[in-house]
Length: 362
View 1 (tube, rainbow, N blue to C red):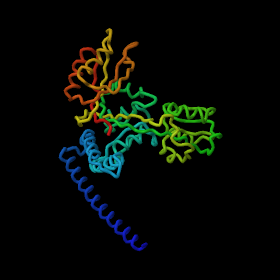
View 2 (tube, rainbow, N blue to C red):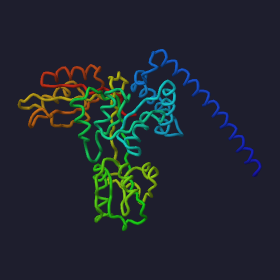
View 3 (cartoon, rainbow, N blue to C red):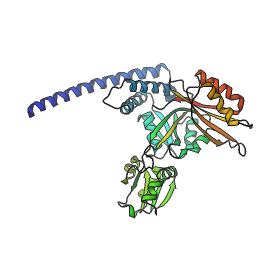
View 4 (tube, one colour):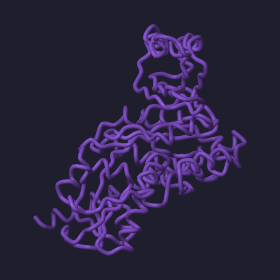
């Protein structure tokens, strides 16, 4: 019986080896065709000119539609994203600016969206991410725009007031926070370093478990981990990658107060994206100073049957109590109903800017 099982196992392993060989040959064939596509576009020097977010979104949606198991949709999307990333990098890897340093959730979002075959450029601020993309140093940038529990990242929204960049994509990243330290006992921790958003997202856990520890906000969770590495009696709230990177022990995992905690990231670039078939459009609008100003901004979308998924107001920085509205819509700016609504909206605004139309997160 044992001998029969050994023979069966050996046969299954041989079958896997044969499948692996076929997979490798198909991936090589895909890479060859991808190289021909890039060459046909005469885009050898500019990776961003032959990377199209809408095309990638279409490919990944078809992956999900074809999936009949046993692997999950999420697993297959990750596999195909890495294949596409490696194929694209044959010509020239994409340069991606993100809010650093290494070990941040922004870095994780960059790899999740573009795959690992990129040149990652950690920046010290959201402003610097925009600057590097505007200057052409980076092909694209990855910036946080809102958290499911703490709301908007205002610095990102404010950058769109003056930046010429467009939104090319989005990513919803589940966020899990871990308490890490050189110490091994909670009672020995006197300080907790973390980004202010992460401190807020773990507010109740900290209140219940470390009520007397000093909470210190720093520029990023990776910086928090670095400080915890250098400071006795200290801990950090950060992602799992930061613990490994800075040699810290995770004392408690997933300490975020909300089990559905997630952060939405925007992909910013220099060009507008074409329609992928399932898109969002983001606009920025300044209302005329008149009664019912917000009503006049919202009415065209209702009349055109366009669904709004988000609206946020920010000071325009052009005058006291002067505000602009950031609005996310379902659909692409090339869609007839969206285009109609925006044309009507122009009559009621002093400033209207299309921030981008881009594929909905896959």
